[in-house]
Image (tube, rainbow, N blue to C red; front, side, top):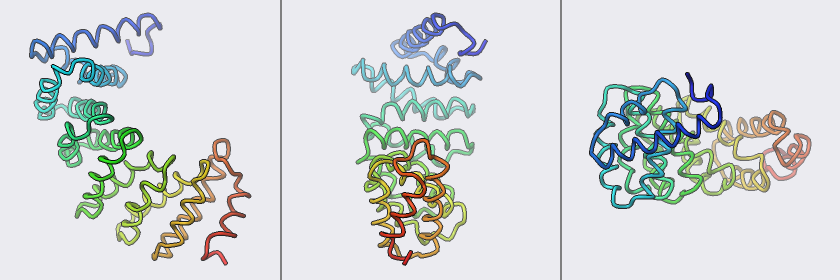
Amino acid sequence: MGFYALAKDDRTALLSKIKSEILIDIRQKKHRAILNYFSDEDTYIRKSAYLSIGRIYFENPELQKKIISLLEELLEKDNFKIRQTVINAAGEIGIKEFEAVKHFFDTGLFDKHHSPRNAVIGSIKKMSEKNPKPILKWAKKYLHHTDKEIRREICHGIELRGRTHPQDILPLLKELQFDTTARVKNTLVHVLGQIAYKKGCLETVIADLNKWQNKEVVLKAIDEIIDVHYRYRNFSVLTQKEAIAYIQKNFKNSK
């Protein structure tokens, strides 16, 4: 039975059981329960497991080295679900203590399976939202990696921080404006659209785009920003009409 097929009280009891069994495993240097939960077919069971790891890590400072060692060992497992859950667990820790888990993302970026790589993107998103300085510094070193998928994943990963603080990620995005790979450019344009529709963000993005040199990318980004203001009309601070009016007045290439 799937996690959300359970009654609410049963879900609460299961969450407590998962955390308790994982804590016992960590204290006794065992893997049985952790392996079962980290490899479970149910996404929400695996999520409960990696959330438990994060909570245990911060609630029990004396176990932190054991937890890091355990995660390092599990990252070597053949089962991609286990490796994916390890990356997500490291992401929970990295929200507060990125240096302790940075090496998991250096490894996870190059995983042979897409699921752990996607977990890196998701973790970058949640970590950079709460703990931006070290994560963005780490991300910057991969912006010009020879592997186009690495560049794309980094671009996508920093998006969430940009939705509320576009000024933090625009310098990194600007470095990708002359990337020759279509998937990277398309992701760049997508992210520029995603960081431009909340309060105060359009102004910041347009001011920055006025300083970019790649007109082709900039014009595609402008089209995406306008389109986002329609697609996200129930969430954007400005209507599409208001956004167009602002762009026409303030985007230098629109005149």
